Length: 303
Image (cartoon, rainbow, N blue to C red; front, side, top):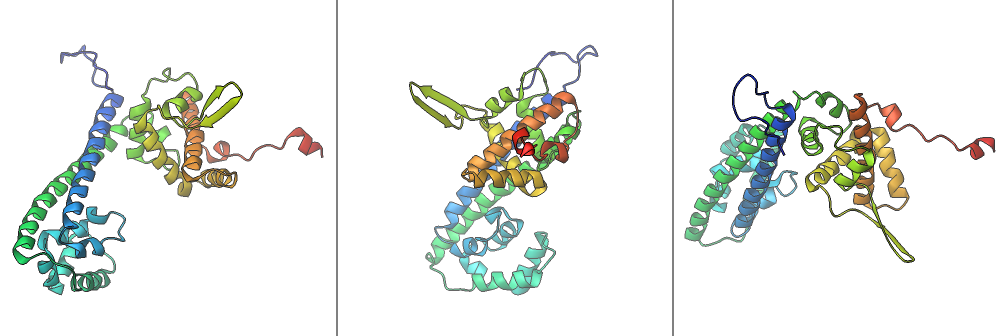
C-alpha cells in the first residue's frame, strides 16, 4: 500500500515516490480489469438468451466479445434480425472501423455467412426489447474497456519513471504493465525480503513441506500474495516464448513429471529468485548467466 508521510503541500514535503504512484495506479488498473470482466460476462450471458449468432461469430477469437469488431457489430446490430439484414458494405465498414487491416473481405464474408444462417429466435417484440438491453450492457462494457486502457497507459507511464523499471523490464516476459504489477506487490524497499527465499514464500512460488511423525508432504503454498502469484503465472507463460533458457527449464520440469501449472510455478520461482538478485545488486538480466547449463559433478568429470 502507498506510504503517506506528509499531508501539507509545502516544499519540505517530498513528492510522492514513483513506487507509491505505481502501486496506486496498479490497484486501479486491476479493479478496472475486474469490472471489464464482469461487464463482459453479463453481456455474454444476456446474448445467450436470444442472439447465439454473434457468440458463434466470435467463438474462436481470443478476446471473444471484448474484441473491437464484436463491439462494433453489436452497436449496429444488437439483434439477430438486424444482423441477418446487414448490408455487406455496412458490415465491412464496421470491421474496418474496428481497426482490422488484413483480410477484411474474407472476414466480412465469414461474418455474413454466420449471421444469415437459420438460428432459433425469440418473438420479434421480445427480441427488440432484449436488443435495447444489449445496447445498455454494451455501453457499460465500452466504458469499462476505455477505463482499462487509460489506467493501463497511466500505470506504464508511472512505472517507467521508477529507477528499477530498467532492471525489471530486462527480464524475458516482463513488459511495462506486468513489471509494474510486480513492483507494486514487491515494493521498492530492498530490505523487506532478506533473501530470495523470503520473497518466494511471499509470492507462493516456493513449495511448503509439512511433516508429522513419519509422514512428509510437499505441496504448493495456499497462503500467499494472490496478486503477485497471478502476475507470476502470466510472467512465466510469457517467458516461455521470450527466453530459450526459460523454455528449456519448463520442458525439464514437465519431463520430470510436473503438471502444467506446477512447471509454470517452478519457472516463476526460479525467475523470481533471479529478479531478487538483480534488484539487490542493481544489474540487468543476463540470459547466459541466469540459465547457464549445470556444471558436471567431479565424479562425472573424472569418469
